[in-house]
Image (cartoon, rainbow, N blue to C red; front, side, top):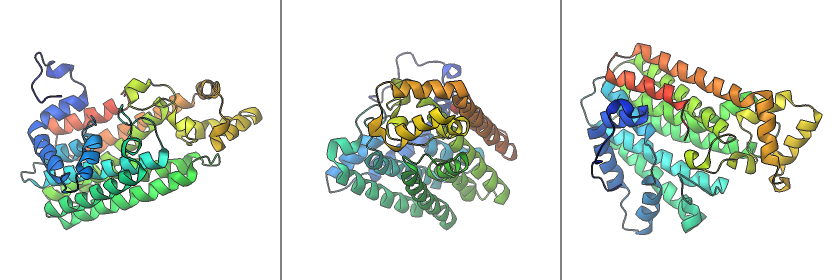
Length: 340
């Protein structure tokens, strides 16, 4: 993108809800992007190079958009939400840099992950840099309570990552444990991104709880859709390789549900391909998809995602009714229908 307007931009009604929300929050997000660009700066040349490679790689900025939109929905007129939104994006980017080292993925947002370009050590250290910068921006917002919420979320995310790492290649991970992992690993940052806005706006405990619920349920829906798409989406749509979770021996909800219905032969199959991915054959992924579809666990995963999205929308009943709340509700509904 060169920053110039499109020659024939599509009408607003033709934009998907993410794009509509981004357009609605355009002036705010310009400030957020400026902060992101500024705070990536360092006299150590490689740090901004690695950070920029990931941060500018085409992410949709959903999490900072939630912070900005929630603040505007509640009538906040200050500027602290810009710092917090940028901090949220830095936390997210830092976790992605660390994730790529742990997962050894081949694709991130449609391109080689940073650790494959510069190596694991640089990715870990630049991730640490982004975490540190995020805390500086939290302080800039001037709210100790918001700082507490986001710093607690960072710790919870790290705990979730450790739990997920322990769950890799562990066929005994059940549905309840898996949901606890993604609640920490993915939903915690969505929840915090929404929760900090009523804190800044001084909107009270009820709205803070409602927005935290909105973010958490949205995050759960987002992750479950991602789980299902890994076994049924197109790599160019997902921004990652279809089958990555399978190839890495990750237990996700579709597999955990399939294990509950598996006969002896299927249990032996899942045990082989999950506990020792090096034993996977070229035909195993297709068989895995066939088993998941036969037992309806991909549909069940998407049904669960829709239920979480519906709870996110319901949580907005406590918020003011305006164009911002309508856009946040549309975002939750869109997440479960996305194909990317």
